[in-house]
Amino acid sequence: MPYDRGAKSKLPTQLTESIESELLRRHKATAATVAGLLVATLLLSIAASISKTFLRHQQNPSLDMALRITILIFGLGSVALRRTRFATMRLQDIGALTGASGLLRTLEKTTVQVALIGAAISAMGFIATLLTGNAFYTYGATLVAVFVLLYCFPTRSSWRRTLQQFAQVPGDPVSPAQAE
Image (cartoon, rainbow, N blue to C red; front, top):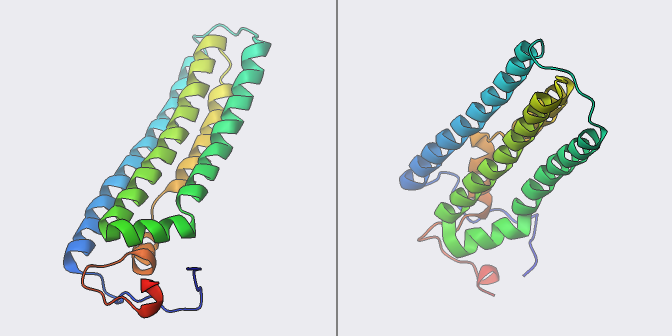
C-alpha cells in the first residue's frame, strides 16, 4: 500500500502515558550520550592543542591522504546511514510491525550509532596528531565530528512527531485502507 502524505495520522494527538514515559527515558539517555560524545570530541581537540608543543612534527603523506579519505567516507557515511534508517517507508514498517516501542528503539539505536561514527572520526584525527605531531588532523576531524554529532542530535519534538506519524498504538482501530 503506497503511503498517502495527505492522509491524517490515525493516531491520537496525545501519546499514551507509557509511550510518553518511554519516549522521555530513551530521549534523555540518547541526548546525554550524544552530548557526552560531543564534549569528548571537543576535549580531544583541546588535548591536541596542548600537546602539540610536546610532539615532534613528522611528515607522512600516505597517512595524510588515507586519513582525509577515511574521514570523508565516515562523515558522508554517517549522513547516509541516518537518512537510510530514518526513511519514511522503513519507519512505517517498523511502526506497523513493532509499534511505538520498536520505533523508539530504532530512533535511539540509530542516533547512537551515528554519534559513535562521529566520535570515531574525532579519535582518528587525534591518533593521527599523536603519530605526526600535526594538530591540523585533530582540528579537521573535530570539525567533521561536531557536524556529525550536531546532525544526529535528537530533539524530543521530532521523535514525538515520528511516533505520532508512524507508530501503531495498541488498541487503535485499523482503518480498511490500512488493513489491505
